[in-house]
Image (cartoon, rainbow, N blue to C red; front, side, top):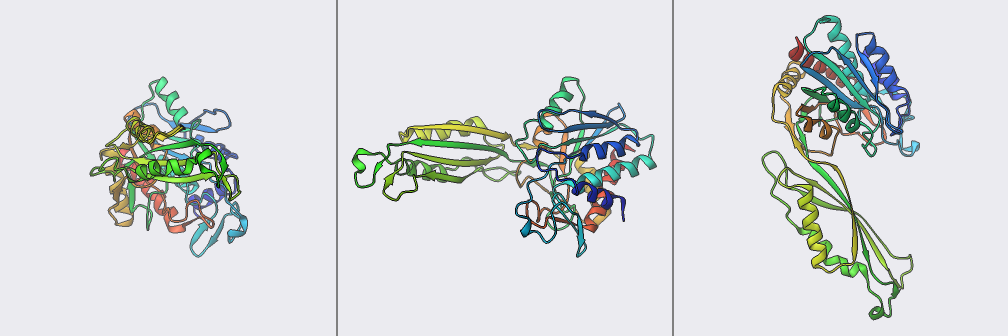
Length: 375
């Protein structure tokens, strides 16, 4: 059994549903301390974070990842228990196999191999691990970055191990992400009997034209790196359960994935203008998960591209698609950020898995990135 596969299986065995870590970070810390890494635990609230660094000189290359996973859902939908790693049909199955315990295993083994071959490498290497990526993401990477910035610890390059690939490990890299802004809208009406609408006020009817306008609004046209900003309604709730009652309140949840062509403040302002113009009696709560970011290809991206081509003879597509990642907290520091990890087809699903060949390819790619940047 390869070192990466063995470590990935050990990590998958830990039921680290967010915000739990279940000892995963301690396991990685023990291994890397043997290679000269210093471990600094940075826990906040229920969230476990660790900063592992070898060396004190610039440039600093950071591998970033999360040890928490999403809940497995009904176990009956899995072909094997989600926290019992199983090899089947050339793949490793288990919750976190793709998102993203295998990446952490590959990063760890790549560091071990690289340091064994280059004990006096240039610059420094670090791993930033959190158990708050799949959750609210308020006590994880963002807090660690605040601590690093407070003491002027500068990240030059950051490689995030999120599952970025489409068909084979390394065929796609993320060099940016859209912003994510969520809203909870509550529209007030007056409850009453459906037979007497004149003495009631139906918030569904009042909100419908405004909601239609929100959905039809063109927020921007995107640019060469990002598609146009989009709004999606995710939940609508109203009613008492009785067919003869006009509801007194309507709840709507929606999310906007936005490009660098607009800002969260501009979106908030435009949405309030639409709601006010429709004379709604409403409240609105916002949650900004992250602003969009884009990293111009530089030394890190070039090193990754070359490492991928050397390993699988494929030139990766550079993309900004998908959801958010912890790269959104790291890019604003000025670091070059790229996301490179397994195929994402099975993430957050039952029977999540990664190909055994992907495990070895990722280990080799990460090790070659180290060689290209720090030798």
